[in-house]
Every structure is written in structure tokens, then in C-alpha cells.
Image 1: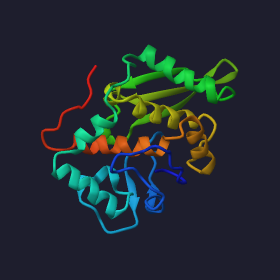
Image 2 (image 1 turned 90 degrees about the vertical axis):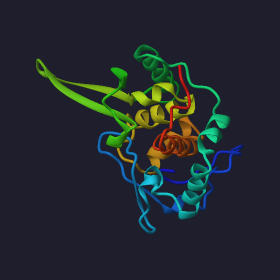
Image 3 (image 1 turned 120 degrees about the horizontal axis):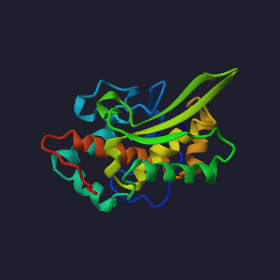
Length: 216
């Protein structure tokens, strides 16, 4: 979704994205993390599609039809039947570092990785990469921390990986440009599809009476 289109093969649920949808998306990013809102080139959309504002009216209408029929959650559970097993900060650190050591060996050192209950979806943040600089003696020490919103402790691995990949990419590419998204797609070829499905899940959670689809 963010950046240039790169469609993964084998996507078969009714809302798989196509190249036709991508040109309408202009991401709006937080200066410190992965934002959840987008600007739209079309007419204003209602708040029920607030996580999909950058997508085409056609795609939003398909999602709205699923929510009206009460089928959005079922579709997501069918596509992603299981939650990941990363339950604590130690396991999250190991998970993220495995990705880093595979794809970004020469990137900056990551000093801390943690789930963060203060990173709320309503604050428009999925994850956050923070650089902390401190003077120690005559040297300036820099530490890098990655935080993931706690709501993603109990979701499919695809969602967790998408967030981890995005924040790791910032170790080498500070700006959300072509190089940044090329690195994201190198680490996870299905990056754009996973983000779209994650946004579908957030849309589901906003429905009246909706409950989490996956549990520990």
C-alpha cells in the first residue's frame, strides 16, 4: 500500500489488492513511527473506513459490504487461522533481531525491542522506531529502540512481521521513499498485502461489539 505497488502472488481472498488501487494512495506518516491514516484523492470518506482512507472508493465499498454482512472477521480468520507465538518482549527482541541479522546485518544496532501498551491505535501508531542520543563522557552514544503496539501481541505473524519490517527498514532508510519500500519488500515480499489486511482487522475491531479474532 505505501510506496510503489508490488503485488504478491497467490492472494485469493475477495479483497486482494491490485495495481489499480495503488495510485490513489498517498501515505501520511508519523515522524517517529508507522502512521495509520492516509490522505485521499477522492471525496471525503465516513469514519467507518478511517483506516482505509487512502484506498479507492471501489475497494472501500467492498469492505463496507463485508462489514454490513458481518463477514469481515470470518474472512480474516479464514485467511489467517492462527496467531503468532511471540508473547513477551524477550521473544519479540529475538524475532526482530532474526530479521535484522538476515537482511540488515550492517544496519545500526538495535538496543531494545518491546511491546508497548501506550502505543494505542487511536494515536495512529502501529510501531515506533526511536533514536536516543546521550552524552557519555566525551562521546555521544546513540541507541535505537523499536516498540510495537500491544494490540499486535495477539495477531497473525503476518501483521507482526509487517510492522517489524517497517521499523527495521528505518535503520538504513530514514525517509519513506522508493529505497525504503524496496527494502521492506526485500524483507517481506507480501508487505503491502499484509498491511492492507492489518487495516482490515483494525476496521473490524472498530465495529460495534467486535472482539479480537485471535487469542494466546
